[in-house]
Length: 321
Length: 282
Image 1 (cartoon, rainbow over the protein chains, first blue to last red):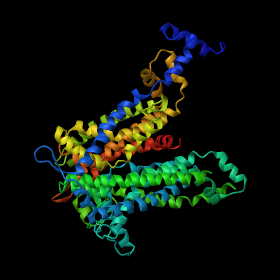
Image 2 (cartoon, chains in turn red, brown):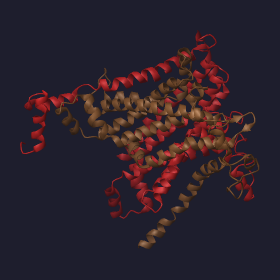
Image 3 (cartoon, rainbow over the protein chains, first blue to last red):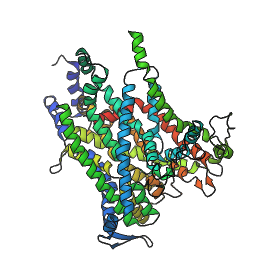
Image 4 (cartoon, chains in turn yellow, brown):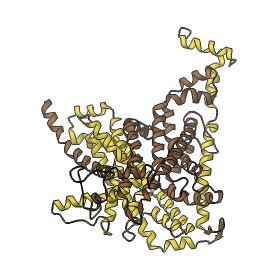
């Protein structure tokens, strides 16, 4: 022990500052690390209670009241009327249906493309760095900027897509004015914006796979596709679960880009639930109904999240075992 | 052998270039439209500057001090985003350190439960809290104020900042802090002097990610601001006036709001990956 200079030095510098005697020093340090972490965590807990939990509770209260904003703030009891209206509101159900469509189709497509791109750029190839940066950029742009970009792209009179189709003598597509096509256009925009996140996460997951695992497979004679299917995909399972989860949460709350691309139309074909809550709260000024819609969304998101996490835990256990 | 390897890999460029076109087209269109005039937009698709249309800097004059100046909102964004980011990352680091290093008990709750409580706040759709914020802010006269925006962005960024920083602190070896205690540091100074600097790459990644969220955020801004605290995304959204949409202005403002984020993307390309992974692969 005394031959180790750093350990011999430690106590020597500490004693003059009046710390514990040399013998008990290490023990007192260990005790330090066993002290409670509350002083560090408490500020954040308080902030979250004030800025997230309290607004949530307030929202619940509003959903059971009628809110008037004319003279300050007044709440009158409305019991269950907001909630029973919600259950019979076909626009609400349409918005849920559209949101689920976006979550299911958008996130799936993003995962598959992101996985493909990550596999293509996994091994170093010339120009790989350029592709990686370019493929990351869309997720860093503002929602509203993306909404407007795609309004230009999908413009049925002056848009570049239209001019390409016309030069190929293909029929023009009613990207934004058909209730059938508009939801698909939103998915295209969402895929453009968020495939980067999947790509980044899955690429990181690929790079974290130890070389030994792949070498062992190659010694066994496995090649290309089989290596990916048998070795790589199972090892990517944990990060895939996390990536899809993150994307799902974001997709459920899609708002800004749709607001500018279609404004929820035509009709209500692209009205996401957040957009519907916003319209009710701030265009019809029915704040209590807006709260009710947003809470219904919270219930659906939470339910989906818990189901997803339970299901993925089950799947992960089987994949890893 | 080597040649056939190269050939076998060459096919990769076909899908990669295909995706490049898809990603680049909207960005290219935004950039050229920022230099287009009225006729270049409403006369059908114009692709190539100097060939198809004559570039003009009109939009730039308009938004940088002209009739549609965005300098005010740009200033608001530059106040709100850094302030909210710094506060959120500071408290997130503090909490992350506490969760990663020290035991926490509250009834049956342990570290993982408290960490889950914090991260689970991110499940909350933003629209749930913003309606309540609107009412409370109206009452407290915080609507359309820089302070109000800093507060709501801080609260909403905190869960992710805590999550990331927790995973970074778990990667820092505890021995260096033990040495700091021996040198007479208390827990706070060991955190500030030793642990925090050691997570610098992660700290930067967390900061940039939080910043990009606040910088781009739209829902809170559109509901809670109207004039004195409007942010850049709002100015993009309001360009569709009665005389039609000022596409050139929108594109120029989008470019202003985008350039810092593209720099972030380039910088983060490597760091972000480890940052997100640190949280994922525990």
